[in-house]
Length: 82
Length: 382
Image (tube, rainbow over all chains, first blue to last red; front, side, top):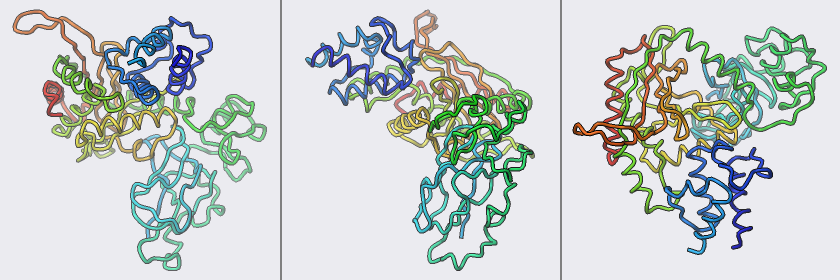
């Protein structure tokens, strides 16, 4: 999967969790958890959705590495390579 | 024969709008089936039936606003037919059109006029001298909703939570609580090292969808402990305290964009953790999409409020009447903690019990908080 595809997948799953989120203007390094007020259940659902979509098991302790779009794409790119 | 009636979905509810029938005459229904959707100040709510049978006749049409307790449908038992049923059994609403003035008691404007409007919208319109004839409604059958009078341009019907109406409902319940309930507060801090270590190990080898959140442990421990302290579980009514045999904790859930509801997870203490997690996930998902069931709103016997990991250290919650207690958990923070006379860093949660002094005393409240602490220290037993 390309980085663009991973980026799209990540943003789509964030949108599914926070439908009101306007991701068009979000900077790559903004903390989306703060920006969109995501709670622990939202993060749980994000990890579950990425599991379904990309087939990866992200450990709970790595959740902080998905806080920004830039970090998340980096992390997912490594994870999907296995 | 049974009657399926407009339920009371909270102490402040006087009436509701029947938005949709999900069953038709002749359909077989079982206890727990969702039969209708009702719109209240809390949003659109799915209403379950509490008996088995067959839908005989629908007594209220879609779009009608009726008061709590009004029969909505006749339910036939085994072998019964409509011929066996005297319509008098379904009084007072066998002929809905004939009694157009059965609406919320708060509404003094007769609804015999052609305008359909929710009670909140009528109240707002009366206060602000808005002619409802000039407002177009976005609700069922063009009924005028509060949002239509507040913002006179026609608004699209959103199938979900009406934030403005919810604000009114919260305001009414909280003002009543602070005016009527003599609260007392007890706070205790608990070391969650064991609980978090157990949780880490449990989650480590499981794929994300099968994992647990700490909140599930907090709810289970609380529900089990509260079961042993009946004076915190039940309802304060006109003639005193009525304890509940089962513990149905209401879980305070924040709604995106503002607002809060606390639907019940029934018998939470009897559910195994994965089941409880599934119920919480399902409930929070439905709340945020705007669909919850009547029994979830009307039945909490106590409330649990957890601020979550991005919250602050502690919360002093307000009791949701007619309940008599609410537990508030702060965010988990690493704090200096003395173990064997040595200061060490531990993950600590602050929990506060707000309780109704008419129903219980502080001594028992303290014992309850200690019982919850003990259960959290033995997570494998939860």
